[in-house]
Image (cartoon, rainbow, N blue to C red; front, side):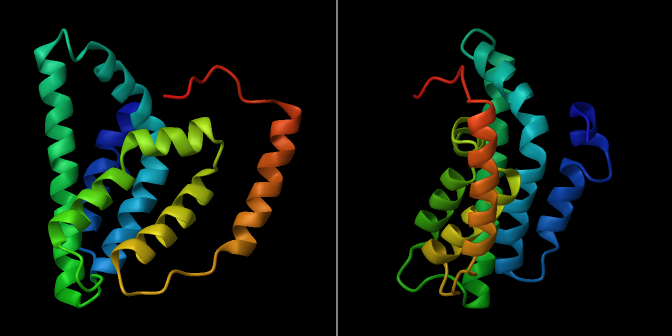
Length: 171
């Protein structure tokens, strides 16, 4: 979707939120959230960077960003509550901590570091993040994604030899 389409298209943010809310299980909701981040972040990222660059001087930009972060945290809490209801939340993991971890792992900055800086593909981001979150937050075994990841790593490595990533500064 185009940048405008992220917010208005049938496949954009409103549809993603609806699908997340209607997920039949907490595991489905978790997987859907990560898939949505992998799909929509490339279009959201440029807009978020602009807002982030002016937020200290522009109160409206700061409020917009804070509202978006609060909405995402609310979605993370909803997913964790559903995991707990389903019996899928890892034993002895407090729901508040689980929601905070889900919120941090699915942040735009994490996506930026892994996809833009480290060169992960959207597919690698999605499969690796889902596997990590399943291990971290649930009692559900993570799928074995090693064969897909190895193929994707080989393609990425080959691309890097042809065109090194430049212009990014580690934070």
